[in-house]
Image (tube, rainbow, N blue to C red; front, side, top):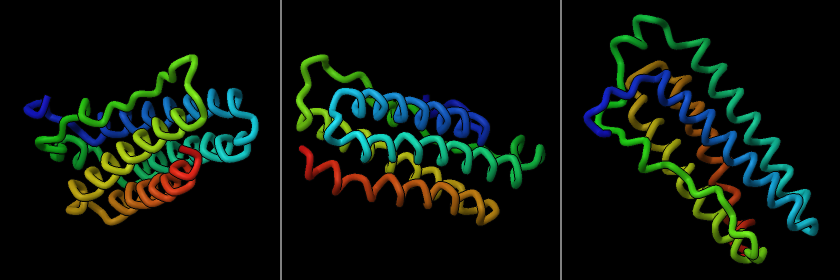
Length: 146
């Protein structure tokens, strides 16, 4: 996959899927663990906002010329595919540990994209860095549940 030309559009599509999968994962946790519903529902709301903000930044700053001449050389998106299926008998501790892994993987993805896109307009890496910070802040909360 690393030899594949990964354009900004491909990265944006992956971002939308990552945030959508994350939202579904946290919706399931909110239903399953009502004592933590408020936390998990907040993550669902953030996932939807993250996706919207990244897409808006992309649409506002990436031109056809940039899109056709820029790629995320050497990036392998499968390295960032999260495990969002929760075992039916998972405890809150197990679910939180899986959520920590999801967040750490998402943060790594967003930081990688930000680093690889730093030669573009500052708004693009900035948007990815903001999402990385937001998602990274979740880890401490989730670790307390684990």
